[in-house]
Length: 286
Picture 1 (cartoon, helix red, strand yellow):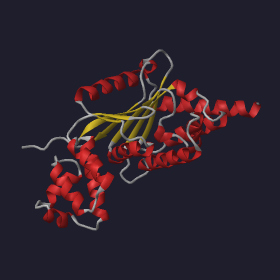
Picture 2 (cartoon, one colour):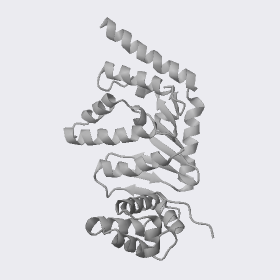
Picture 3 (cartoon, one colour):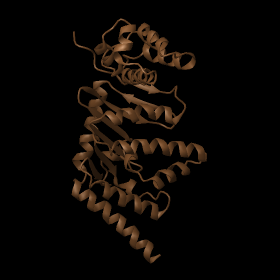
């Protein structure tokens, strides 16, 4: 019998269990012997590729000395590990919600990010991100710094040895929106152009001509060989991971519509570079 495709919940549970095992200094063989299982079975549990019984999770947590709130949270995650689709409303902290996204990005072979209002997060400069966060008003300095740390962790994914390919699809209007002042925007646009020099990064601009971008909300598609595709959506206080096939196909169709009218890669880079030069000329004559 074939094993079920890993779910986002199952993968996160497996990663948590692997981290606990490694922190305990125990090998797969050590732990497998204690729960009367094979090391290969435990390995598949830790990658989310095999369903795990709540009883087995409880036994593992006992071995790792986990109790209290962390134990309750992991057992709750185990009970729903095979459910597809995850609306994370029970994680009030931004860093906690982003943990799942950071993990999926790190394992992805290809990431597609569409943004209609701002520059895609993985390609934002630090000053641009900071200006966006400060503009919200309700975030204090400490929270802004915490979010900046998370963003830097996400950026690092694109620089690793096995970095995923990134296709950033951005609406033209986002390129004109002044964030942090004209100089900040100019440097952000220059950074976009420089990013496309890396072989794993592509940028496509959707022109402002009444395209599908007019009604599309930001979304991210995460693809990995041997695992189902996941779509990520973010709200102010929650995160949503879509895993059902019909939902994935819906966003795939939306993406194809956007790319059908988007400028090609050379045209997009040329367009962004010209916007940056225009901002530079305006600054020099001001």
